[in-house]
Length: 313
Image 1 (spheres, rainbow, N blue to C red):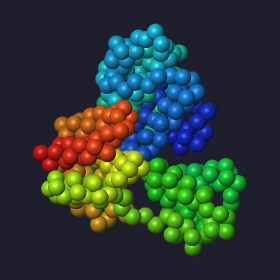
Image 2: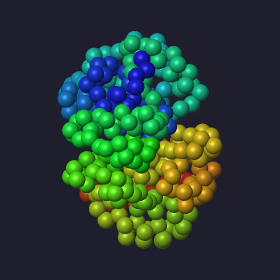
Image 3: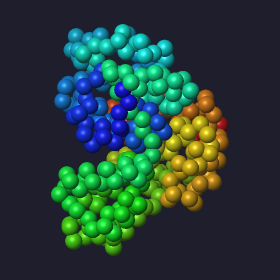
């Protein structure tokens, strides 16, 4: 069953009652938000263990356990799964979360399951103005805050079209005391500039010595690393999820106008085979970052150098 992805995030408890969640689209931060919302509920509330696997066949081979009867599987490839498989694999102790980049095969599958009552289909694209209004109104009601008309519409127009960036900006806005929630102060709060991750990413064609020095000068702790990794992951997934260069160019954030040409150059360098390698690199790095926190800064540097090697090869 296809459901409203914004409503899912804002009113999660209405929807967490299925065994199958299919998340698709091209807005990577929104995809991550939906995925994390599902994982957090099943892991913290219901005690599911989490596994990352390529396809559902792998789940059946690897999830037998005496200690973790409840499992949530994050699946990155549709494989041979079809609409009929939903009934075949349904099990109250298992939850299946598919993260599916758009493709002709995936689009055909989505059309077939959009009315299936045993699953949820969540499509994640850039936020429209109407979606932003719903999200801001939700925050206002939650926080007991109201804006005058000028401030409200300034906020709507200023917010990013990507969910995670919008969410971060709203967190800043609603931390302000009421007397500072005006256009004058919001302009300073919502001014956007390139992150350190963007600055390093768009120097990817520089030599390794330059990149290593830039990384060591700017990525100093766990917070820096998280921002760096998330920014680069978002940039790479923006490329991966857009098969058309015309669509990709439209999705480049406005604040990256100076980097547009280099971003397009990177896009043109990435083949289908490289997309697969980059996806594998990102997910393996995420796993390493969770398992080896004492080595995170080194892992982050190695990640970017490997990313560069794949892109420019």
